[in-house]
Length: 612
Ligand SMILES: Nc1ncnc2c1ncn2[C@@H]1O[C@H](COP(=O)(O)OP(=O)(O)OP(=O)(O)O)[C@@H](O)[C@H]1O
Image (tube, rainbow, N blue to C red; front, top):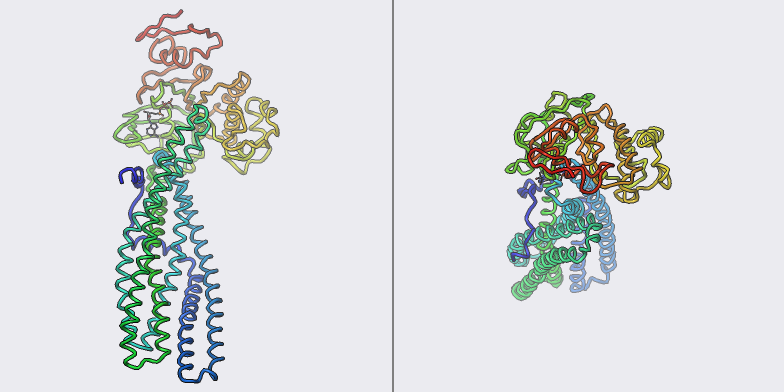
């Protein structure tokens, strides 16, 4: 059991809704469809009535045969049977068509809401939740919810059928009707028993499927790395137990579900035998007509079908309910980044001030503690430090992707928490190390932050970056298709596109994680030119990886374990021989054009390394 349930725990944001809250929420999705729902309800009543009428008409026929009047009423009864059948078909068709429309519309809305919620989530949400799991909530869980809707309509129709049939039976023979009803509590009891079992096994099956999705998603994302390191076997070995777990859990769910019908039919069969034996003998002695007897047999059969269906539906109903619970949990996941006000930011100058900021991805493990830093408007600052020092963390707080626990972060002397977030983020240009390009053309990607930008603006931005020569190397210039994630472009070209995109955005603050990938000298020069252009006149925070950048910025900030350990410009810091020199020796020295292997160490006061 241990292995079988590994990794099938709920997500952090999962929650359990009471049945009543869940139903109320579901009903709210159906409320706008009241018109179509009413039509469906009328059709359900009509089709159930026509279905229930068939055995009644047939029983009249049997009575007519017994009474010898069949020759005169036969054709009328045949016509009545035909009419009931035909009308039943029409009513049923209209009902199915409209309920398909209602269900489709509701799922459409639910999926849109779920997707909208996914877009709203903070970045921390994506760190904690594998994307495959999110995908399965938006796709298969909403589908399962659709089954609830279809089943509910069927369920109502079945319940009505049972109702009509019971009334008919009571009208013909109270004794028989009461006998038939005796088995109802048994069936309902069994259905309730299955209810709990089905809900648990279904929830597990859904979670195991989303684990498979998450694994697939991650594998596809890192397939190039896996192939590069020849790790296909390891990837397969990781996938296999997850897939097998899903198989086992789904199989178990199948066993639970497939046990329902046979057990119910067995109970129903035994019930019918008892009814025919007991009821039949008792009623015969009272002089029951052949028609009544026929109706009784028909009704017993009709009666069982809806009841067993209701019992079986119950478990599927639970499946849909737990799916809807998961979708609603995704929609309702509380935001971590909380704005206390939504003041329009206006045109930002770009002054940034961290005041005693404490932040940890996990609050128990702070990455920054009582952190202070002021960056003046228009200043270009380079953040350097060993890996894990906290450089990216600073940029994530400025972009307001994460919520800090203590202190204040001021933008133009205003608390970042009071700014209207969308308006604020529009003025922040963030460039990751590997720029992400969406499928489409180079022009589409440059235009991304401002879709209304005209072709001439896009061309001007592209031409301004690196003199625009890079466009000549693209097979169709700005109309070149970038491929999935920009794979059809070289790393350097992707960076140039990202810089042109920044020009179109025209942000007040630029947060740039410089690429570590080396590019050819020509592209390097084009990127440098582009950077000078893009950073000019804006507040810029560069997580620096290139010597040319740190040589030219206004101020270098050396971070270590979330603390500023040194700051100043390149020349002053080098002369000081402190922590910056260590970082310089490790990451930047060999980028110098005069570098020869083994040369260029800058001696530090703490750990002197002789220059050779
Ligand atoms: N999403 C995350 N969840 C949990 N911890 C994180 C997360 N991102 C970073 N950390 C941790 O926070 C610390 C600072 O990381 P950060 O990414 O800011 O370092 P960095 O200086 O940018 O490093 P690098 O140069 O390698 O990118 C590290 O200890 C890291 O493990």
